Length: 81
Image (cartoon, rainbow, N blue to C red):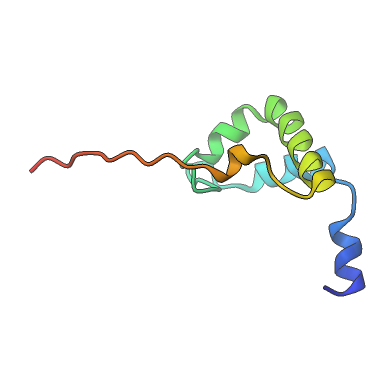
C-alpha cells in the first residue's frame, strides 16, 4: 500500500459514514452474504449504527475478528418434486 492509502485506512471510523452507506443501499438488495435486506438496516439504523461502529473500531484496534465470525452453519433444504 502507498503511504496515502495507509493514511486513508487509518482514519477514525465515523458513525456519519456508516449512516451514509446504509442510506445508499438499494432497499430490496442484500449488502452481504447473509441475505439480510438493506431495508432492515435502514429501518433499524439508529440501533445498528452504534453496534456497527463499536464492531468496526474493535476490528481496527485488534486487527482481527472474533472467532465467531469465522464459523458457518450449513442447512440443507429439501426440494420437493
